[in-house]
Image (cartoon, rainbow, N blue to C red; front, side, top):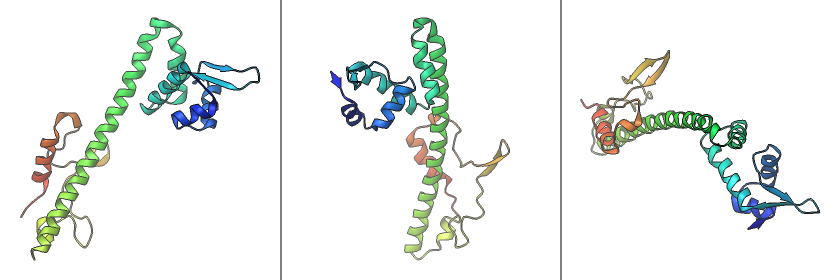
Length: 182
């Protein structure tokens, strides 16, 4: 199938400016021109563009994507280089996923504790006794801090560095155990 630049922009959700930029940068390939100079894109162009978007979403920079695509012209001899690039992207994404998992764990800790404190308050109990980290002074006396590589990090009970090492059920159990009770 053939597409004009407007049709390709609509199909991908990218702006015409971005499509032109990607073409000029050597990322969008398989672009033909009509005798009047209009761009004509094929399904190969679309496939190439989807590859750009996938690599970009995986954390590749535009120069890295170009290097990746340029190396494909070398055939299988460039497979080690491309696989190395993909392994590095995966490692970067895993690190980000671990950091996000730790952040979600922390937010869940405070949500669970705050909800327990609210329930205690509605029963006429002192909410600070149930969850002492939401006081009128703010988050104070938080015991789950530790120094890691010269910076402070939250280390909730049961929170592991690698998010893949525990399941969602484990996480729910850990959250309940992490809320200190008097």
